[in-house]
Image (cartoon, rainbow, N blue to C red; front, side, top):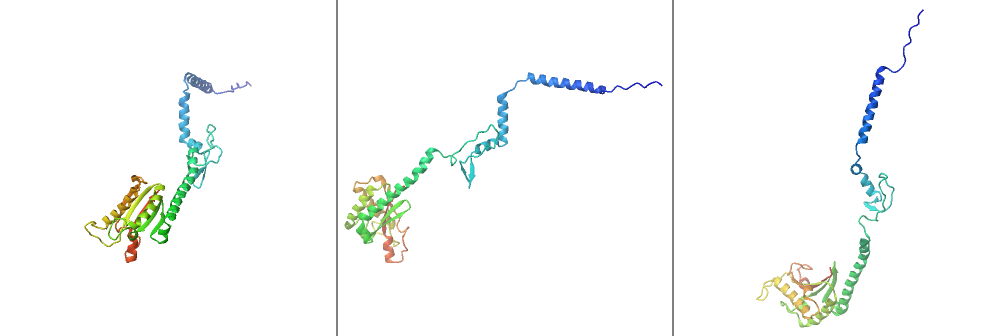
Length: 264
C-alpha cells in the first residue's frame, strides 16, 4: 500500500507577509524619529505647565507649612511634590520678615512710652492744680488717646461774658506750663447749658461757647510757650451736655470749657 504524502508543518503563508510588513513599519518609525529634532526647552515648558495644572506647584509652595487654627506655621514637613520639588522652611508667619519682627518687638515699647508720657502729663497736672482739684473746680480725665481738663464757667468767666476772670488767670498759667511740656494737639472746646441767650454781643449760645474757647486760646498763645498750629478752638453751645439740663446744679456742670491734649 502506498504511503500518503506528509503535510508540511509551519507558519501559514500569510504570516511571513505580515511579519515583513511589521518590520518595515518599525523601520520607518525609527527613521522618522532619528530625522526629527528634540526641542528640550519646549518640552520643559510643557511639562511645567502640566505639573502646575495638576496642582504640583501649589503642593511645593505649601510643603514647608502646617496650618494650625487658620495660621500657617514654619514647622517643616516632608515634600509631597515630585522629586524635582524642593522643601523649604518658612517663617512662623507668612510675609514675616526680620524688619517686621523688629517693628512688632518695638510696638510694645512705643505703647509703653506713650502711656508713660500720658501718665506724666496727668501727674504734672494733678500736682500743679492740686488746690483746684481739691476744691472740685477742675477735673482731669483720660478718654481714649487724649487727656481732658475741664473747668466750669463759674470759676473762669463772669456771667454772660467771654472774658477770663482775673482770679482765674493764675490757674491758666499753671495749665499753660504743663501744656507747653506736653506733645500733641491742644483742642479748646466751649459748652453752655440749654437756656437761650440773645444779646447785642452774642446771638446765641453758639457765639458764647465759641467766644469763650477763643478767649482761652488767646491766653494760651499769649504766653508764647506753645506754637499756634498746635491749638484749636471749638464751640458746641448746648449740643454736648454732660448731664440733663433739669436743675441749676446740672446746668452749672454743663457750662464748661474743656482742654483736650491729643497725642495721636
